[in-house]
Amino acid sequence: MRTGKEVKMKSNQNSPRRRWFLVAGLLGLALFARTVAAAADDETYERLRILSKAFKVVRDGYVEPVPFDELVDNAIRGMLEHLDPHSSYITSEEFQAFSESTSGKFGGLGMEVTQRGGVLMIVTPIEDTPASRAGLEPGDLIVTIEDTSTDQLRLDEAVELLKGDPGTDVTIEVLREGWDDPKEFTLTREVIRVKSVRSKMLDPGYGYVRISVFQEDTTSQLEKALDKLSEENKGPLSGVVMDLRQNPGGLLDQAVSVSDTFLNSGIVVSTKGRDASQRQQFAATPNKTPREYPLVVLVDGGSASASEIVAGALQDHGRAVLVGEPTFGKGSVQTIIKLDDGSALRLTTAFYYTPNGRLIQARGIEPDFLVGKAESALMKESRRRREADLRGHLQNGQSGEQDKGEAEQAWWLADIQLTRALQLVESYAIFDKAHRKRAATEGAAAQ
Image (cartoon, rainbow, N blue to C red; front, side):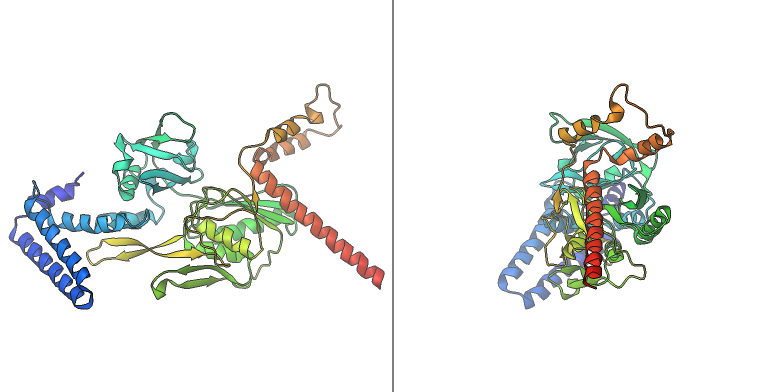
């Protein structure tokens, strides 16, 4: 499918200026081949000579004239798209749109997508966006976008079709494991402005913070949320559950600083690539505000990239216990390399490693406690068999305010992973308190 710009370029391809650029480009390509040949072996030169000949054959012999720029773009794009799902060529127009999208002001559906085996797959929908409200889930396959089959699209083309002006609709067909046929969803695009951090009290003394994406102000939002929970608790917290489920990632520096919020020293994450500039280590620093309370982190198959960096760092340092399901396994580093004409290469240049040297890519992070999302029948049954559920049960003589408080807390009781996380963090605090009490008693007896 050609854009309007490509059609315009086609109509002007025989202008003298166009021919001059064409000749200059071919001469440049030949000079490049000779330069490389001077420093490379005969096989390298031969392959570059074949590339140059193929370029000339297509330009001169294709059934329709093809703009020179289009041939170059397609050659570069083909070189990158077969490397891995995350490397791609970005035209100057696409790069401008990409720059606008990173500012957080764009119309979209609010989901991270990737390609696996040529199939467009949802990594995770972002919380409180059209994608999440429609019920889309990690692992869902997008079969068509506006009747266009996604197996015929590059990843950047599919993303471009999903994006659009806020208020406009886009229809997609989605196939999920267990479904016999794809189901159609019509979603309305919105300006995606995601609130990165949400917080709430669970049981007295125990707080809950959810990070939905890592953006520019995530760490400052997290610190404010933790301070607010301490204020609500009217004292230091006894423990915290941090929820990174269905978090597609985001900014590396925020992943490092969020980890640093709970660490005082040590490596947070390292990157290793072929080039020396891609071999880096990011370390934690001493915290001005001590946050030494027990920490449990929730993860699942939608936790990717920056989420995996945080989970891996806290797990390796023994600072947190991980609960949930194995993470997505997106542990590669993409570098945006801008070219002279305004286009750019999005190139995978390194891999992420946890502090203990574990490779995240295609492996993910394994939780300490494997807990699925489905609630067990035993747990449902035990929750039904409560005194308050029995017909004719006696009242406790207290006002309905307690019942109201219990109803307000019920939002997390149906979440088996969160329930398990809270049980673990409370158990740690109980054992820690008992240990301290025993140590104090033994100390007093010794005196």
